[in-house]
Image 1 (cartoon, rainbow, N blue to C red):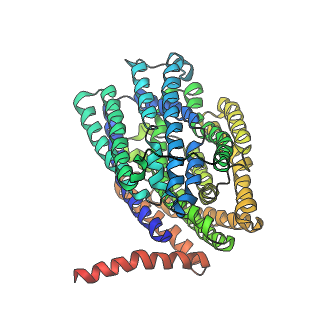
Image 2 (cartoon, helix red, strand yellow; image 1 turned 90 degrees about the vertical axis):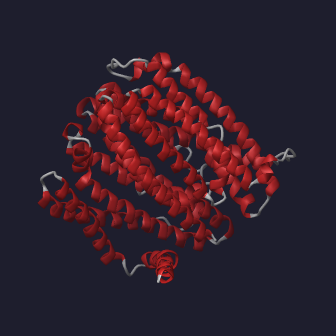
Image 3 (cartoon, rainbow, N blue to C red; image 1 turned 135 degrees about the vertical axis):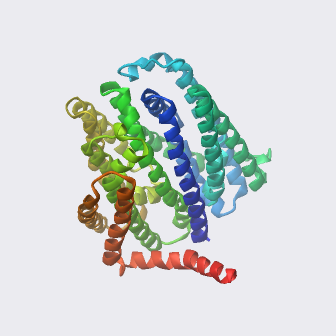
Length: 513
């Protein structure tokens, strides 16, 4: 059941994200054709400011999600009702606070921008970003219940249906009116509509949510929730500082135009990250169920498989990015939107280091291990901010990204697996790091070989780009296959793929005959 739920969630997620990715790229072409680079930078900057306001969420989401795994597994409806009532109150307050705090920052926008561009209604534009962010919180609790109950595919369906329609409407609005305000207004309307639809779906799936009789939560449950929230507040702070300050520092010390240029790379990187994240998100609920129903040995064996899959995906994608990211940007938007090779290398390095954490983070979150590394984000954010602010003066954008690399290596890289292995899996940690180093060496060697071959097609044109893509798909995957095809983890994944994908394809083929 867990495996089937994970695969169903994954199929929907990958299909939805692929469609969303295609639509996003078309929408970005429309954006840069109609509006100036300053609008692009403004879009990236305001998105960053609003992500800083997500600190108000205080880690309520993961804490509440973890608290739902056990009652859902045990079909304890009364406990689920009580938790959802608490969740509803918390997110209503969060939405209101985000709206108030966001609006109160409007008079201080000049502080975040080195040179404020001559864009009309800049404060109204910002307030539309605030409204869209605040509205998204009011129905979060019902979406989270669906996801926690191993039905993420339902939330995915609504998410990408509305996302696709929104982007199509926004493209039409841009070309017909050239109005950024109407562009953003469409986004607010879509957010409201999506929340209403998913709320009604949750009510249909879980009719007990409408019941008025709700029991009070016991002290042990509330104590556990608030303990996790206290830990997650610090995790949230660290995550926001590390992930959201790059654009602020670039805007303040390098310039808003550079934020716009980086936002194109971020769109590509983040789009792929979202696709990959669906794999790990799709199994989180199943891992949570695994953690409360299976032995540590079983959980550890599944973790090894997930970590191997983690390496294969991020190793392959990082190699491809190094070879084709700049050619893709040039063909997609034009040469004037390119960043230097040194900046691209740092962007991809951070993509790899962050990506290789996903298996650990998935199991750590699903097992509720929030408390043990609660101080880690403080050091991570301080190191990131200090190093970035120092190096940006000497190295520009490269310095900002080096700050992120250093903060990751000195904190997350070793603390997160230490917590998972000591308090969750309860196995020796050294084999994990030996395996990590081995995976990294394979990635580096494979990337060098792939780059050497791809350099044969150095001229940037569509035909050469296709050849580069083929090279980046074939060489890394063949090398990985040769090295790992006899491992336990590969055999497990192949068997899974054969049972749930290849078998269905064969069955469909038989039926068609």
